[in-house]
Image 1 (tube, one colour):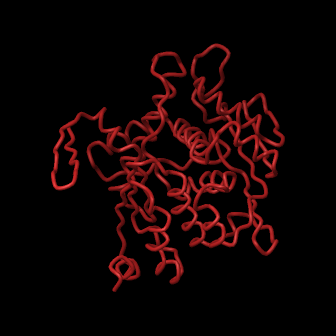
Image 2 (cartoon, helix red, strand yellow):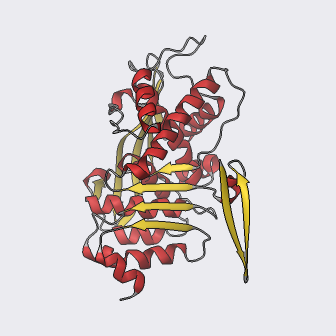
Image 3 (cartoon, one colour):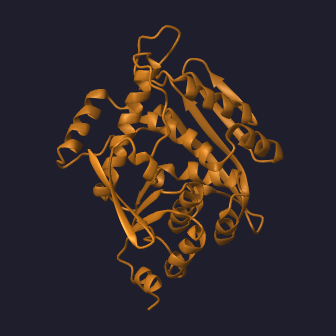
Length: 325
């Protein structure tokens, strides 16, 4: 596939035709979000989930010598929100996090639990000596060990090859996470890679049929929902301390608060130049105040960045705030 890149310099415009490999230099990250069932946006990202899971399984089984790669496609939906919240609140000094916490009246993260397992009853049975269930690459084993070492405490179930990691947020936990991951983006990417492996819990023939339908743009069934007990990675709990001193479970927040953290938390984390955000109706659950101020909050957060954003909305608040009507 060939791409055309337009480079503007002063009064001149230069057209460059480049191949799909070099396009990475011009478009570092693509972040998608949809509040509904917009398959035009979701299908390419979901297909990338499948590709990464298969790629990882192949490398782990030593059928390929390819190195691991950092995902370029990030699909931020309700399922990824816990990872976004944890990553941002651990690295709370990052630019924009203070404003995000103030808007949501969050003081800090209190505790959370991450479960990583590779030998659940639904896991594929790969014939690898000394391994059970999903076989992790050396890169993923390193990330898992980093999470284990940063955890306050953990429990191990040998039968399921299951690590239950408990994190109580304090200065020691914060220092450990900073040492092993350096940034919210790095932490989230590690968690995201494990989450992508959840697709391996779905029967391979089912995955292949859905992949075929996606390529042929047919009416597509969703991937079956994977229960938490079978996932390679899932979050068991996340508790927050609010500004008023109250402790709450993250899931008890409103839909609007979930959506607000998802959208702005994603933008805060992904600060690389030449990133592209595709946001489909990102304000559907916002209260009137947040809808009215959405664009101004967005501009404030991205004013010093070199990024692009495509946004679709039916909200008159968005149109008014963009054009200053």
